[in-house]
Figure (cartoon, one colour):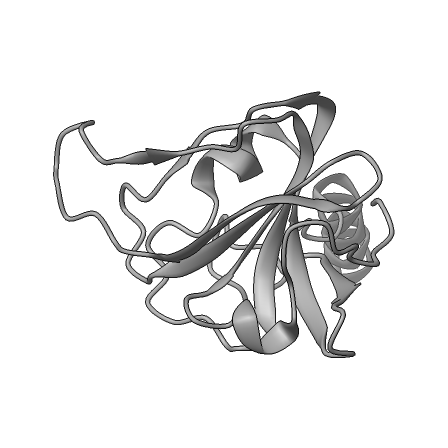
Length: 157
């Protein structure tokens, strides 16, 4: 009888298998993948990767803090005048658009939060096609010597 109970326990564990999430993380909040982004000042930003429609749509929404050396990098499949807004974003940001060669083509500095509950938050976009957009804490971009035409260094995921 004892052997049968042990065999049954192994069979159940074999059917269930290991959990796919981290036991210490809340459901749906998996550890973010980070890539280093080297700036002209030599500072390295640790950027979360937003490379799926779901990750891009969520962005930095509902975050109440962003370290000065952290951000989020949005990766797109084609160059386009990608539009961003601050709905449900609780921290002000600097937004940096880059072309396919990772050269900065547009910067929006100190973009404020939007407290509107409808869809009327201001929208921000470049005048040229971008493949990448980096969001960092507001007021950070100037200290990193990032300006239009500079190139950032990072690998594609």
